[in-house]
Length: 219
Image 1 (spheres, rainbow, N blue to C red):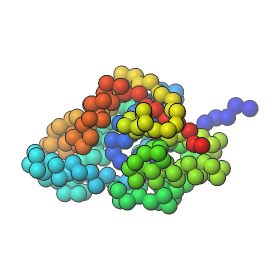
Image 2 (cartoon, rainbow, N blue to C red; image 1 turned 135 degrees about the vertical axis):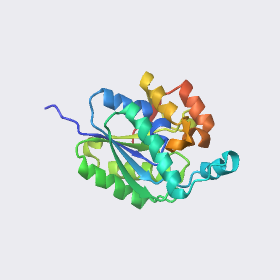
Image 3 (tube, one colour; image 1 turned 120 degrees about the vertical axis):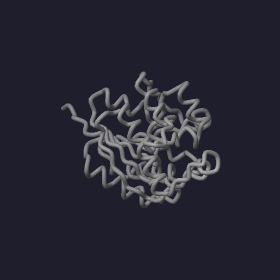
Image 4 (cartoon, rainbow, N blue to C red; image 1 turned 90 degrees about the horizontal axis):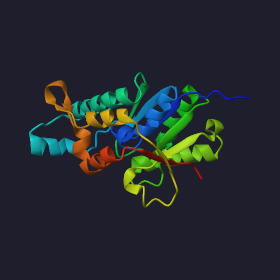
């Protein structure tokens, strides 16, 4: 019997992770005809770029303004990767996500989108929010709580060579480059501040040269 897959649900810790780490994979699921669901788990408020913009560019945003700006560039990037994707915001505190909170968020969307596939960052990453999400999905998968055990852990590119687990690559198409461009777009009058590319420029520049995604499975 053929199993009809449900939505491809991507749990994103911060605005820009969907593009910087998962863009090619999101695009591949969209092109394959899957329903794409993006869940932004934290509010992204803790990025050091808010203070840097104020000091270096004289653009001083409040925390709510900064979060709105980050959401705007993420939304624009997603329209290239998966036009019409459903986007949800959980708004947990950036930098303080716990595994329990991550489990609550993942469980919510497994219930809302059953028989799907579920992706997030690897638990082998070094950022605590990434670890919390990765470990939560891994624990749920190992406990039999993920339909069809269809979980995927996306590797941040800084660890492609150093993470102790063999991964699989997903090739990028030309549309992925357009998503990256949204994180370089500077237009303050309409609330666009190129936050992603200012926050981690070395990773964005590297990703534009090699826009593949890489993931591993739960073990």
